[in-house]
Length: 343
Image (cartoon, rainbow, N blue to C red):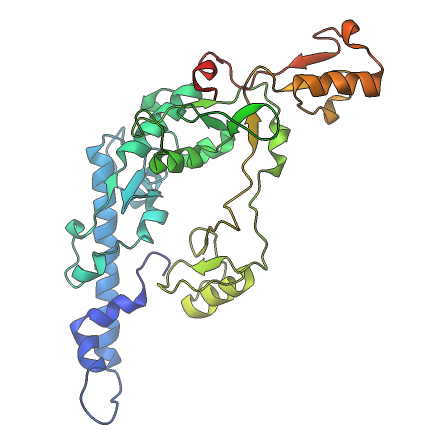
């Protein structure tokens, strides 16, 4: 059920149109002997046609390193990191996201389902961004024929956009740290000021950058906020998470609703997708005290760490020794490009 368009599409079929528009005074019973096979025929045809279209795109892009014949192998192919489909300017990762995406004009031709119905393509911008990402994490573009999205998630790396201008967040200048998925969405947004918005370039935060700083890297929303919606219904009513789960269970028969598959978060200005972490990048950023236990290390501006050492450890500025009292962590291994983008 999770991979089908809205049931409202069925109302455009001849059999259902005739039933709805019946001019008789009394409403006759729906002939289930005709309706059920008609629904099954459509769903089977729809799913097969969409899967064939998406799989053909993977073949044409050369993303499969060997012939694939079994359904399990096809299912695995859709998990590849390079399986980035685009329709209506929106990115869909793999089969799960592409299948629940219904193009704005798709319903006009739904009675004659074929693979030509679907306007999907492999996203050029998204794919180039992905090539850049796998390169800077130490993998070659050939890895896109075997690397899966789960592999990238497991790496848990953070990236910054080299096309964007550094800005200040009440201290040193820097940028927002993005997950690899957010990098692809960011590339699609093509911010103003990019020299070439269709050539996304990112850099990865260094291994030395403390990963614990991303402990706040969570969604800025509560289950009680009315910022959720059903992935299958065309209605855009906003529900609480509990209401959305109940709706999916009752209306669509899905007992264990999955985020981004069965129910979706509706981003607004008041409820951003998540709290993006700001990362200082210029020379004044990312200093930390070595006198404090490693578990309490905090990155500070240069002036602030000096002040901290004076106030807490009673060490005067002339006596401070780099590598003993304090150190600076490089956010990215190669900082040469930062000079070109500072405001």
